[in-house]
Amino acid sequence: MKVHEYQAKALMAKFGIPVPKGGVAATPDEAKKVAKDLGGSVVVKAQVHAGGRGKAGGVKVVSNPDEAAEFTKSILGTQLVTFQTGPEGVPVTSVLVEETMNIVKELYLAMLIEPSTRSIVVIASEAGGMDIEEVAATTPEKILRAVVDPTVGLQPYQGRQLAYGMGLAPELVRPAADLMLKLYKLFVEKDCSQAEINPLVVTGDGRVLPVDAKLTIDDDAMFRHKDLAELRDAGQEDPLEAQAHDIGVIYVRLDGDVGCLVNGAGLAMATMDVVTNVGAKPANFLDVGGGADEERIRAAVGILLSDPNVKRVLVNIFGGILRCDMLARGLVAAYEDTKSTAPLVVRMLGTNAEEGRQVLSESGLNVTIAHTFNDAAEALRG
Ligand code: GDP
Ligand code: MN
Figure 1 (cartoon, protein in one colour):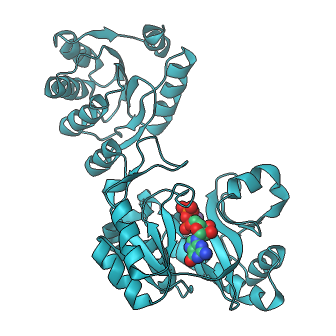
Figure 2: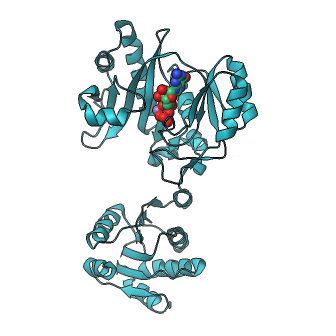
Figure 3: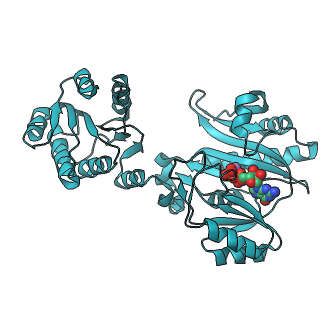
């Protein structure tokens, strides 16, 4: 789950990280009021779950409260398109109004879970700001990293090493290292999968603090962070992915035309490989899980079919706890609900597979029954 910049900064502040003063606003009047309270010039920032706002016109430094209201008015209710969003963009429903910083230097700091080392890795660079992707591509030596030993956590010496490596003045090394330790604590306690501060700035008055903040919390850990659930902004998510989240299935929308319904993440990935191997493209990743019942399957297939890009559907199910006949009835019900005519290729094995195939062949749907993985793929070729 991603959270907004203002929410990430509030969490950081709770963990003792210094952040700029500011407030969130959902109307031009609110923005004006926050700007007035801050006094002087402020920066107004569109709150969306995507980076690249600066380059897309979503961040503006203004010199008085009226200008803050004006810019807020111009951006609220629009879809912001950045290089990190799809062409349809993401809706701007609030802005963060913050004191401006006298920025002397823009650094980069991030933490993420690295599968290959099975550890949290801290990434830091002296060359932060809006062109960090370019820095990574052309001058990778400017990107520093420290792997954290999970048994002892991030060590102060690692923070100092990174801070020196970022070229910070000696008196800023300790505050920067301290900030990293606090961010690490937040990362672990809140089960983050990613944290990114870009830029982390050095100000004219000698402070080190985040001017931008992104946090992603591991969805699978949300059950133990009930307090964080309210930070979710479903309006920022793909509508179909948000619906799938609500019924408890794992669905990721992709850009092909073959809707895929599979149980088990491993089988789902193998299915996507097979679809791709015959020259077709999956429209989604969908894992209904082992224990799905008929209603959940009906709802999940309904979501899959409501994607207008889906022109045909591949069902690849291994019936263990999930009974194939129940799955077939859910499938037929979803086709009836959506009045879809998308041709269906079904491969099902395991518990009650024969009954399941029977339900499908009597359903009147345009269905091809495949008996092996290969047969299923061949039915999609061309
Ligand atoms: P992003 O483009 O979505 O990553 O948004 P950021 O929050 O990183 O803002 C983009 C850029 O706006 C930053 O890299 C800064 O250069 C600039 N910026 C943001 N806040 C301030 C500020 O208070 N003062 C100044 N001068 N620039 C700012
Ligand atoms: Mn940024």
